[in-house]
Length: 257
Image (cartoon, rainbow, N blue to C red):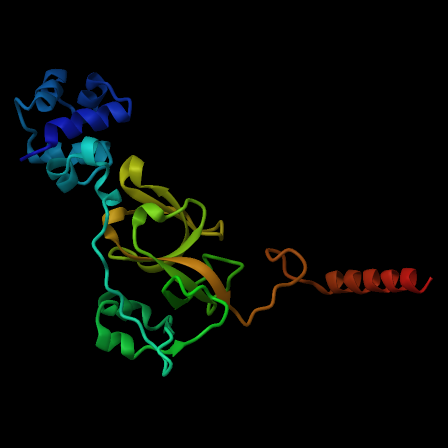
């Protein structure tokens, strides 16, 4: 059963597009849009592909998923994903580390127990035992002030709808690989996630919900880089150090006086 007619009508109205406006974008007569929405006619492949672009929806979802009744496909409850975890001699769950060099292999081996056993494992205290954790080593400078080599500890998120806009996550995706970004959730509106780098020199981009394989919400990080007391965007200069020392001396004089 095709849901093209009902989905087309629902998504067009949701985006506040009139039949005339949609017809202009598709370069067809308005009567054709009416025929599509009534189920009296079906668009040719080229028109169908253009429809999916205009309405921001995949062709498969447009044809086979009842969006009005069930919501966007990306928001549907995902099947239970059995994670491969490691435990210590006391049966306590360890954290598996996915290093920079292992990221490409992880995309193919995240569900393979034999592959996962080859990755380093460690334990951290003070993390809630109500979640499963995984560690990912950052590469690149897109999430400054976290520098390359920083290890981000993520707690597993099993449903896409649990993603909270503005928080940072490690996403394992079919299209972008393993990425750490600040995520904004637009799954209900268009079935996509908006990924933003904290480094303003990198442009935001979108990923489709169905392309996301795993989600890990950032809970902690490990870094050998100690932050400067000043602005991280501006390197600490000798003048800055001199000013800091003068301030310390002035505070000491006040205390002694």
